[in-house]
Length: 152
Image (cartoon, rainbow, N blue to C red):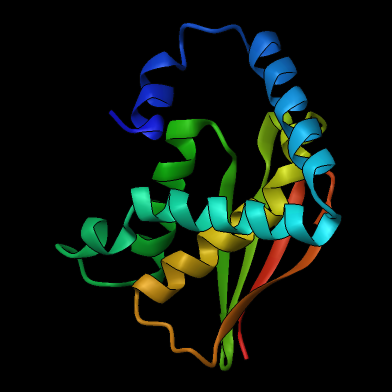
């Protein structure tokens, strides 16, 4: 059974304070094991792996690909983990994504969400056909919200 499946089954079994303390210890260890660039690269890779466990292309294959369907599908994933929600806007040269972190914005998850989400959104966009010239970049990470740009 994958770690994602185990986590999903166990969500109701551990108390939130226990999860928060354990997560804080894990994040401290990850950050202590490398410099900030290594930590960020690791968390981006974790986000890409997470996206691979939740392929959007499969979920939207039976529906016309609209922005509403895409946002609904991404938010269904986030809701299943209680990880906030995303809003997406379009421009002629890309997409703006605003991820609202929800209730954990002040907790230990806030430290990892920027790079984690960057990896996840980049992987999802690529799985939907985004070209190599386009990238997902974090443009802002304030308490409660992370902003991204996917484009040139």
